[in-house]
Length: 535
Image 1: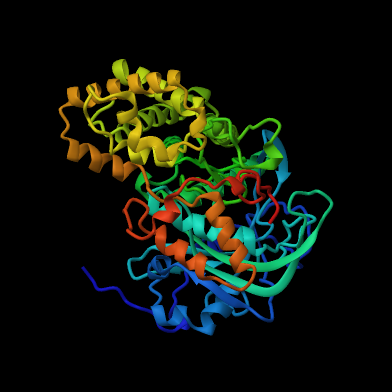
Image 2: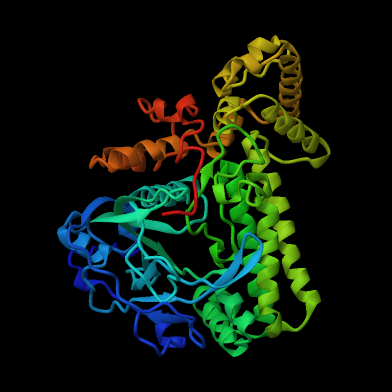
């Protein structure tokens, strides 16, 4: 294996901007808001700022780009990844796409506050797109300014990396940089705008292409342009499928369906709620993308959504995410239909989502319970009863599953004795009635018998459960505490959480305070329980 080459000068980064080279550009070069037709992207420059400061960077992402650690602590790093300095080979642009928002077609959307700097090629030959979020307006910004504030940037930076280390497919985040300038935002669209610190994050992914990237061209009847984009996507991101053809289009769509299902299974496993699963926020690579009003399910409630915009209908609630992903894939199928012109093979491909999700969900549930296999005849009832119990009393999902691994495997113990390891998971112990104790005790004994019948050793059960059930997640209140400090110039908690979340399944002695359930003060606090699409 070749040793990794470390880059100590930014000018040594190698760029290969295939997207620009192979797809049509917007002929208009003036950066004004407009409808862009017949093009996949518009060239645009980041807005320069005067007083930038690096808050944090992710060393693992820097390693993907072959960047030496010394250069990541330099002022040059800050200037490049806030958008002040363009490197040789960078050719910034914003992409055109559309999408369904909350179930309704929204027309052209596009990169309204994201600017792609270019594709870096690392020493392994991997292509990584560098994208600045919050670096200024683009032709797709509509009535917005293309900027981002520190609070939302902290949340996206930390969550991108937290999700990766949890094993969830995701885009990555290289850096979080303060611009030194203020941005006016109305956090809850309540008529009370105020200035907030501005920030830019650098997001990294093989591609930021979305379902909506194809939808916009289908909606406009620009079928040949959609075909060019799909052919390009297959050749660059799915080369293992072969050269583009009708058969390969169907294979591609089926793989997108499978990747999406695998991603959603992981969301459900760790209790992640995306909050805004519009089709323009769905990656064709099956990556979690666009961390806006997301949240972590703390007390188990399948009807919870963190997005205040979705408070009435709860379309994007936790329990509805698998169905929404399926619906979104249906919209992608509609978009590419003109290239297929056959319903049945598209339907067969989309059925791969259902099959993959069901198989993945069963495997996931088995792992969370420490079982070696999932037997629907037995385990459907076992799991259904558990999910009912988690809702009857306000129960912290993350803590409950993690502590379940500590259960003493003895059916003869009393209800209270069996429950002892789980008590930290309950928010309101007074809700635990005698009837609840008896029902939970019955479930725990059924679970113990199921484990014993499986023949799995207790040490193996615990190992399996601790690998599926994280001890540490980016709880909403922890992110808010880090934001509070960062807004006052103290970045220590941002970096402390970044380090903590690198090892979410490890015990990490001395860090137990970060694994505690949500405190009462955070129950209704903005940023902890309520979020909006504002950034």
